Length: 207
Ligand code: VGL
Ligand code: ZN
Image (tube, rainbow, N blue to C red; front, side):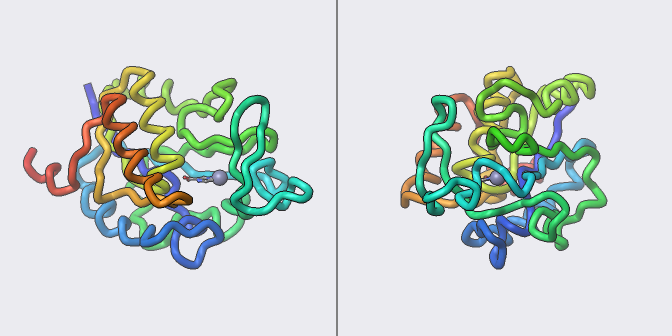
């Protein structure tokens, strides 16, 4: 069986200067680059929204960034426009060593539903293909890095565990949004409780 490194949404809009910047989001990039040589399978997800995406406050009259709406029974945060298809903000950060990426999965492409997880849309009605791809490569263990800890990283980890993948969270290679001050802490606890192993990038040097 094989293992894979997963890079969640390491895109310009989630780094300082971007429209949905995560504090110190760029600080993970040298760490992510430095562990790539431990993996043959390096899979990146890319938040990839059409300009009319439902998660953008700008597409919901009277809503402001940070507001919550109900969407088919699911709570949806109103985000600033971000990761719009074919824009600079949606590109991978240019200091990321993208030459090592072996496969890319784009998500959030359906304007009517958000997709935090790299596996499924938030309503769990459609898949990105990541799960089938991992199975086709005999990958049963994943190591997750990227942005943001309390959204796309968390949902990717929880879905991976539900799908039966052995899942490690590389704690120094993720950063979160923290709309509320303890969101990141709670997200880490939730992932751990669901069965994720919390490791440090330096632990990878020991095997
Ligand atoms: C994300 C909010 C909206 C993420 C994506 O990558 O964590 N967060 N879209
Ligand atoms: Zn998004």
